[in-house]
Length: 210
Image (cartoon, rainbow, N blue to C red; front, side, top):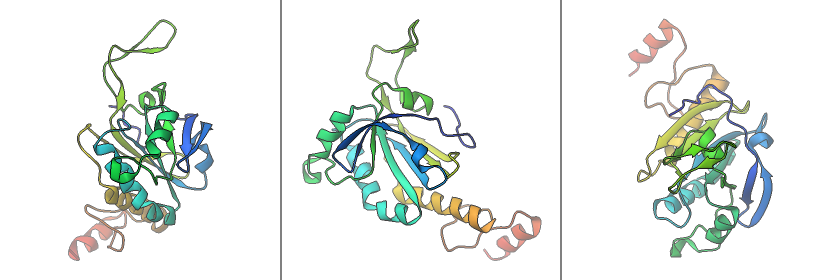
């Protein structure tokens, strides 16, 4: 598994569904550079069981991300048409109607490959095309990308393990705190708690207040 933290987030341009109903052909994260943080999360597949719980959980907290100038972007290896069909089904019937943040269609599997979250056995033919004898879907990867386009945090769960959206917000708060206050965030830090200066004195003061 590749560690992308500290590196530029891999670029992509792909089809995506915006605002729950509009398909665009050239969605990329470049639009957020210098303007917003990005939480890019991968999920395995449309029309499944755990995935809609995560998709709705991000939607429920979308206002909190937006208040922090952070865009939320979902991505799976399904087609844009599949995303759109899933978005038509109400939540009470197992669908994701009401999701408004972008859902990217990684049908070529290149985005999942470049972020190293593609699950399954695959290879490349002589022309560089990805080939496989089995279905290829993404692990539950999550990447926090700063306003310079650099990955600051990544988390990858296996397929059955849903993520904690509040933890994504906590790490985003920590990044914002580090950037604005020049302090580092210790274990179990959350917004409003004391952080630490990058010095021996700062560490000592922090430990004395525990």
